[in-house]
Image (cartoon, rainbow, N blue to C red; front, side):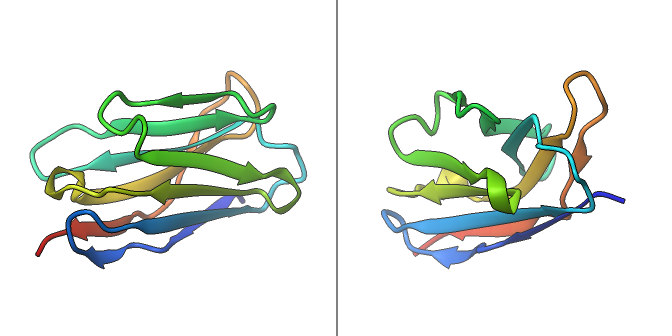
Length: 117
């Protein structure tokens, strides 16, 4: 059973930084793609950033230049370095992975990020 465990959320002031981590366990495969999504009340979950096994990345326009996604394939871990945080970045951040291309993704339980003074 694949499990994703996120960590690193919290409260930060505008302009501050946070680093999220997500560890995937329960698979012997090299994970195809790992990513971060976020959701606020009343809105649909949206893509923040994603990274493939080969290191190809994709970012939401709203975070380009401020957030950096990376991964450690040996540890099945994905990171999200968030800088210059804004109040509008406040959301629950979810880790998502697709183990094999074309199969259903797995989701983490979410971690709250609050940007407020």
